[in-house]
Length: 249
Image 1 (cartoon, rainbow, N blue to C red):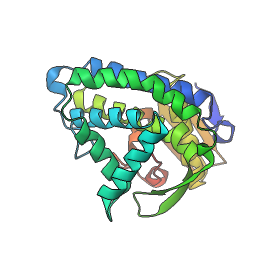
Image 2 (image 1 turned 90 degrees about the horizontal axis):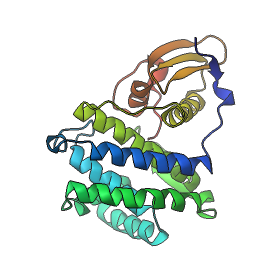
Image 3 (image 1 turned 180 degrees about the vertical axis):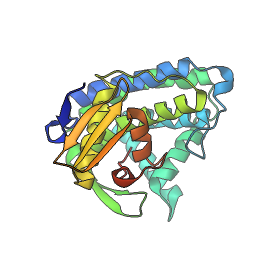
Image 4 (image 1 turned 135 degrees about the horizontal axis):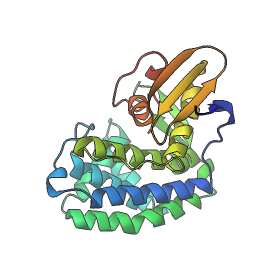
């Protein structure tokens, strides 16, 4: 039986580990895209507006954007202007897809392979920017204040990781999962989920990237696949009880 891990002992992802996980995830997404058959690219994903091709365009766009400050500022200005009264993040992701729509799939993958390591390095060396606050609208209509360090170290790795899940779901591919990479990302999700709801629980996550996690005494006992746990918390699937607490991806 797997030893239970108290969530209070899970260290949150930070530098330099964050750079290693970012580079590794960018590489795994590129490897997945390399494995796709021609008819896989038109398959619908869990994101209603995107098939696999469009989702890849977003991932490449996000990776390329966060490789320099001028790129980030240019993307933010364009998205803010385009969004109007809407969500800036939605305008930015739509623009990422649209600007790369003319690339071949081989060109998309090549650009991801080139930008992936560069993006991981750039994110890790923004010492002054990391402390800056940013406002982030949430799915429930609330607005949270994040530090840019949270975006750089956590969200910009969770996002391609979850899109790798989406692409595997859409194409029927088996997702490459390891304890040291995927398990670490998922453990960090568990720690944040526990912090957000603040209730006692015992959580058994199955699969290569799973584990058993506890907080407090008593509470809900939950058992499910580790990847499905993340799909539920991201809003891609439904859950009950403590699984209604969403976590940003």
